Length: 159
Image (cartoon, rainbow, N blue to C red):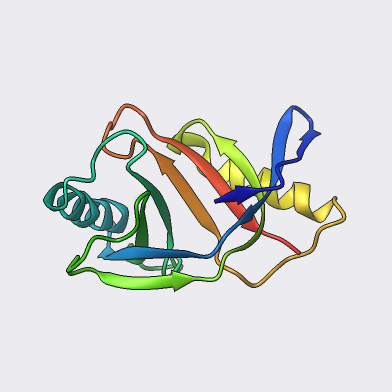
C-alpha cells in the first residue's frame, strides 16, 4: 500500500514522503465530547465480530470530521478500518472508497504531543518544495486498543 519512501530531517524531525494507494474501508463515526472513543469502540466491535483483531490484520486510520470549533466541546471523528485481506462479505459497515494520494508522514510517539507533531509537520511542508493538497489529513493508529500504546503516523496531504 505504500510506495516511494524517502526520508528527510528537520531539527531531528523525520518526515517520509509516502504515496498512499487507493483503499476501500469500513467507516465508523463518533460525534460529541469523546468522538475518538465512540468511533474506535464501534470499530473494535466490528473487528471482533469479523475476527479481524490480530497482528497485521488491518490498518486503522482516523481524522476529525468536523474539526473542533470554538465554544463547543463537541466535534466528530471518523475511523477507517482497512482489513489486510479486504472487506469481509456482508460486513454491514458503511463502506468508503478513498482514492489515495501523496503524503508527508511523521511519527507521533504519544497523544500528549499530537498537536505539536502536526504543527511541526505543517512547518516542514511550508519550508519544503511541497504544497498543500486537498485530500484528507489522516492519523494511522498502531495498536489502538492497547491503551498504554498511543502511537501514530500523521499523514499530511501534499503535492
